[in-house]
Length: 358
Image (cartoon, rainbow, N blue to C red; front, side, top):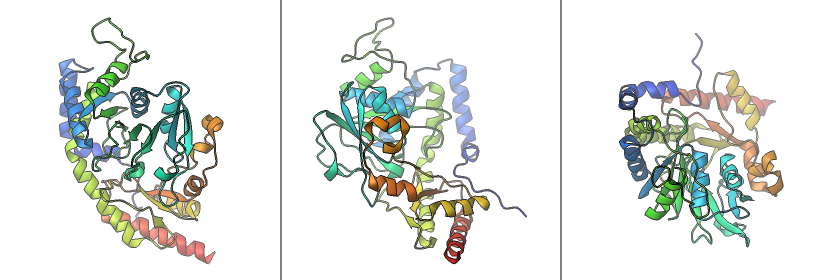
């Protein structure tokens, strides 16, 4: 009998788990005719701000927009530099370029792929730093010399993590807390900062057909629509349960993996957005798992310094390069059971034995 495939994500299964509440909420929005803004969006902004531990939240169209608008809100302008970690999704640096600034790509720590506060390459044009809480691990930057934008795209379900300036979240469907399409949010501790972000995302329009300059910037169209807000509100009550399940599965992996497949260290409160291991034989192990119907992912196969679009700002990042050559993400979503984790671990041990005998 063929064994079922083990997927990196199961969005259909996740929806089935919350189908009643989600579909009712979406129908309510459709029947209301209020597709942009309105009470559903306001409720989502307030609820998600509380969830992430910030006083204010402003819904925007995507996580990338959230990063770009957060950077603009703290004063980043064309020609400025923004420090970004060498290990992250492209949007972290892409948002810097979208606002006309230049990414200063910093190498990460040798133990975990996070920025190191002791080696931040702050220069005379550095205006901000993006602290990426990668895979759910907290990026701590005590006493930062410039404003910090917290990239919280992978931090849903973690304890509040911010440096008191501004944060950006993505609700792409595969996130632990995901929408049914694109969506994002900018978080702020300051009401004036939140108002500036809201104006930026609504064409700088305080009243119908009145468009104002926002600190030298022209507003854009970037808003969280009511349908996505409704989906997020339906999923939000299940976030703690999902995170608890992921932590339990991660602990089961920890107890079974062979010594040469090393899990990344996890801090207290880590929500296990991804369960990532390192191995010098990563590619061979991955191929072995694929043959057995087990999906894996590589986050990320190359550092930001090696991306063609960022070649002008490339610099040596040996720690990031070493990580990217060894990192492998194993399935850890809440739709898995203990037998699935055991099967993955069995396949990894089989692969290591076979490779050792080769």
